[in-house]
View (cartoon, rainbow, N blue to C red):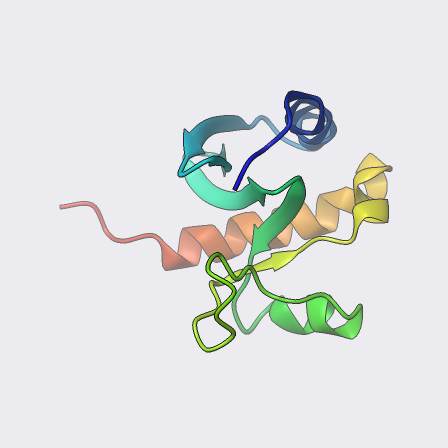
Length: 112
């Protein structure tokens, strides 16, 4: 799961037009955080947003699929690929970012 520096910089620049984000390299990919919550990841120069029952249908309606880190369709992760064209305009991107952040908040484990 590699990430090219140019794609990483492009994605982070686009996301920062919507909300402050940070990132951390993980397993050859990149995890992206907003408000301290992991809401997106980049793998193989593809951007994926965190999903649950609230926003998964939006991705499925556009024909987008889940992140399959090992190619095993029986073990999809709860991240779906964002259509590339949505990255181009912050106004189009914002609702998708906000929904993924909300999912990440709901799925966060309580702090002890």
